Image 1 (cartoon, rainbow, N blue to C red):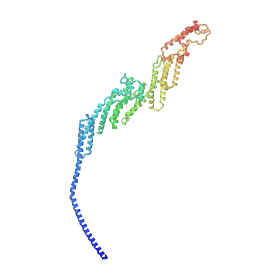
Image 2: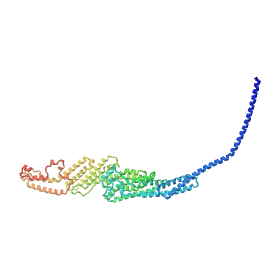
Image 3: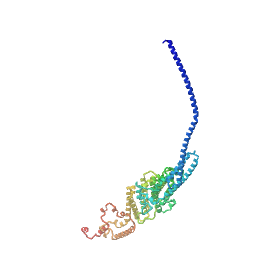
Image 4: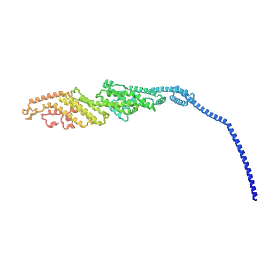
Length: 618
């Protein structure tokens, strides 16, 4: 094929392509026109469908609102139903079923909170008002129930029940009901024993305590805290005070104490010590226990309640102690003051625990103040005793020269003090940190010195100097013997005992010298030397003494001895070992005292009878 043919063929193909392109363009334009028409129609359809879509959405939202409303209505109806049921229980009162009553109050309180947070409902305000009124009635009935329960189960505690809570050794004896055992040793042993058990009485049955606690909680939640406080305080305080009165506790003033006879006052002090122990360890402890349980979780109210319940009872007890501590001092009061001081020391830890809160500060400090006051008064009384011994001006002398009542009183006083040795040492420490045993030794020595000085003065009342010495010998011997047999010996020491034993011996020697000097002179030849061995009874002219002189000597001896006998048979040496010859008080008198008076009398009667020694021995 040539070029022209090829060109012609190429032109034909180009014309064919051009024709194809023109047809494609025409089809495209037609499609665009058709598609444009569809778009217009769809837009018109969408416009036509829009109202239907809007109605469908509104219907769906309406259905949702209806569901919500139905649910809200159902909840409200449920709350109404619960309120109706709670109201029915509340109107019946708490007597039939207290637990259900308390649940009804909780439910009513919950409903009230619900309606308060849904105030958009038209009838909400009316419901809230009704619920509040109903709740007020419910709490009022609750108060009555709390008061009735507390009153009905709060009974006065009989003394016998209180005694049952004491350790055995502190319970009243069978012979003296209502009184404590008088054995101080038993009391001290029990008091210091770690096994001493005190069992507070059951003031309110345990099964009632949870109910009272729940009632108290409901009253506090309702804002009736003060009503709860008044009911609880008045009820329990009255019962506590009546229990103490039934036990024997009474309010006594300083004037009442001053007017009492000592025997009566001493008995009341003994009872007060017993009452203090019972009140603190049993009644106050029991009161705190139930207060902690009933008012658990309401701390400020609980502490204040307990403080006011016990305040008057504590005041009555402590006021008696204060009256004794402030009353006129006298030596016999020292031991009861020490007893009172002891019980306050013994109870101090319990008092600090029971009255440890801020609300009880005044009572705690009052107890501490009484302890200090008793210690101070006891110390001053101790000092008064020393002065009273030194200045005792008893004019009536003991006629027989025996132990003076002052001596026995002072010695018994000092011996009794040593039963309180530990207490005295504690007492001294109240005021200063020092060697308490040295301080006690100093005070005891001063009392002994004061007694000895006073006895020296009293001895001068006797006209007979022999009786003076006998009196001092008797009294000093009594002092020494008593000290040796008591704890005072350990305190005063062996040197003190030995020094005063020598003093006793000195008075005994002085008595013998003064009493028997004139008598012995009558049987002693002074200034006459025998020349013929006749002696006092010889009658020989060379004997140096005449028969007349011998007779005169015997006459004087008889007169002196009879006078001595007449006077001294009225005197008294109460201690048997002092009545024996001084030699017999040694360790082995048989070694050097061979003959008794009756032996000598028999042997003298055998003189000059011509018997041989063998016959004598037979």
